[in-house]
Length: 61
Figure 1: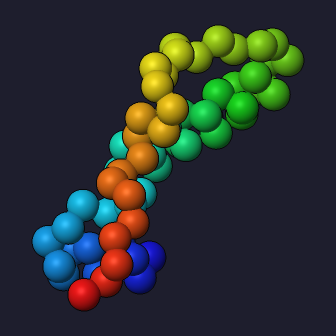
Figure 2: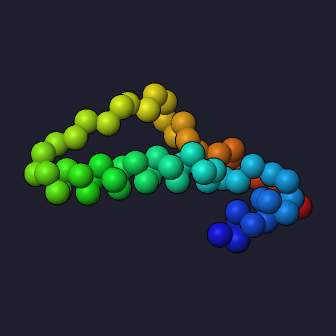
């Protein structure tokens, strides 16, 4: 949370952008649905490794 606040203050893109949190929420929702229904769910594939991750960490100035 501190990193996110600092990114906002410094006008930088955070390492963990909202898209990553959204993907996490989709996975959690699918887990609940699968457990509730006792069935497997298939989610759409997200192409690429770490496609929702923000930019690499940089030294703080």
